Structure formats: structure tokens, C-alpha cells
Length: 67
Image (cartoon, rainbow, N blue to C red):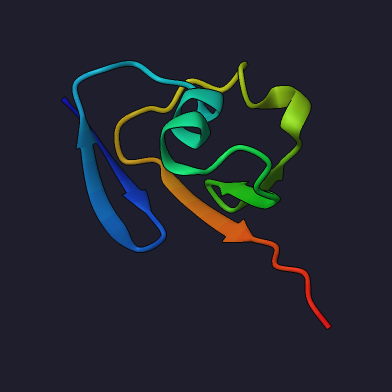
């Protein structure tokens, strides 16, 4: 079991997943998001490379356009 802190909430998974996998599960297609992983901004080209580990802290900030 892997416990992570996601946007201030504890989440538990039984799988080794990447940030890419997490975003595909949580976010609608085409959503603009900024990912902070353990207090560092992650660029989208690295989403598949980072495997989430126990007690990692992840913040997802969605970008909303409008006028």
C-alpha cells in the first residue's frame, strides 16, 4: 500500500503508479494542470518518469481560463 498526500488529502493506492497515471485517472482530457511533486514543479515530459512513492506530497493546480 502506498500513501500519498494529494492536495492536502491522504490517498492510498495498491499500485506503483506514475504522475502520468495519476493525472489520467483524476483529470479530464485536455485539462491544464501544474504539478508540484515534493515541493518542486514537474514538467509534463517527466510525468511518466516519476513513480509515486510512499508519503510523497503532490499538489495539482488546475488552470482555468475566462474573461
